[in-house]
Image 1 (spheres, helix red, strand yellow):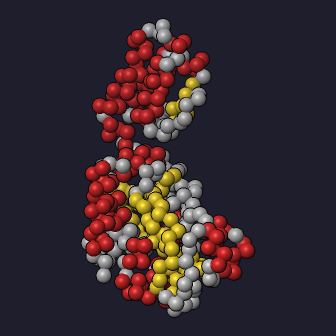
Image 2: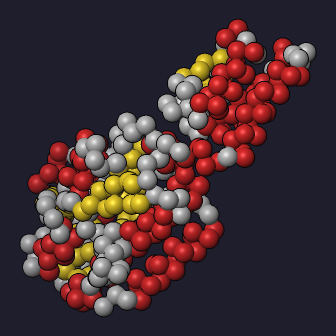
Image 3: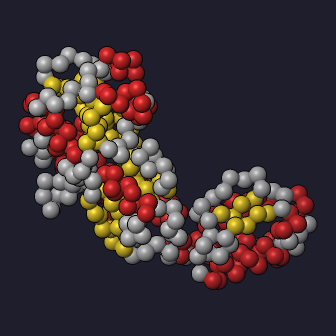
Length: 324
């Protein structure tokens, strides 16, 4: 690792980058976050930084007459990284722990052999890189807090930005989830657009810490709507959510379609009342981890691969076919 750092440092010194107003932050490879040319967007990945750095230099007119030997140094560093790409991920530990909540069929399943769609999917992806994934289940609000504050919990297996804005998210989603409204069978209210919330029966039951997206998040955070809400905390929130509706202790719930379908008994006793959104969710990591940018870059790459997307669809088909 020191070889790469030395090569890039030598390149910068030989090109007198300070005079050209280059801003270098945390150049040491073990700490490198950004190699930034003024006017260019910062790049968290070392390989991307080197390419941005190299292409920028060749575009600077002042360097047209620079000795070729010095100009080639950056190319040598780039080639070195291409020849040994595994060095880019060398900082990522061999064991990672992510928190989640009981959210079938995504993060939990019906048996130890079927621990959940995302549970299996992310475990397989990281295993391809020699990384063992440990997943710990907590009530959702506690999982979010631990991902931010507990050094033994590195992040969240699944999340959306509204739930944990202080964490570092992948930019490539893991998959999409479909958020629906549900009511008791004898209720005819239907969500069609944000104006439908004005006539929504109350209380609306929500789970503490969940991010539902617009316009529900705005509705929840509006103090005037507090009397119209019932908030669940603690474990097994999804199962309790449905029971609250079945027993008519609440009027409306919001939950993912596959979560509701995971129990046939649930769908038999409650009524679909419109779709809020079909939205992506992501993996998220504590940004204070020295390797957070590296793991996010790795997952962005893996989650976009066609072969992994095919595997995801296969898992979804397996789980939905096995629903009781």
